Length: 136
Figure 1 (cartoon, rainbow, N blue to C red):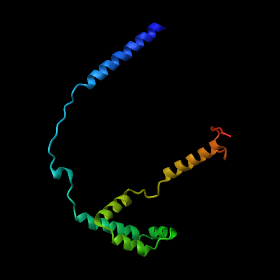
Figure 2: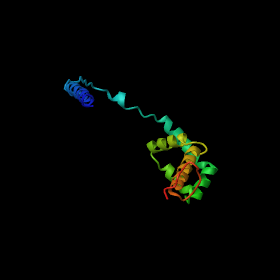
Figure 3: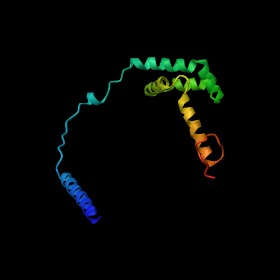
Figure 4: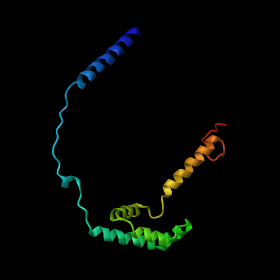
């Protein structure tokens, strides 16, 4: 038993010595001047009008207006706020609208309901899943 421990200790000590020795080896680093054009993308003004038109068309849809009314938001005031947005804000909003799922995030809703039912099942408030045990 003591031979196994001493071998293990030697292996660990040897690997630590090698690791610490390699940390002292200098690493090569280089620096270069990067031109501004490589980092900053030029702003195109043609896309702003298209983005503004898509956002206005989105807010003009009847289902969007109905959803805003259900939340207590006046459609005319929302449209006025959209008209007052800057070009960057319009581009960002257009990007979020384009990335939004058409029917909503059904998979996310199902997963959330599953997690809630699982937690309530484990806490003993419900008995939905047969594979869980209550902590009560």
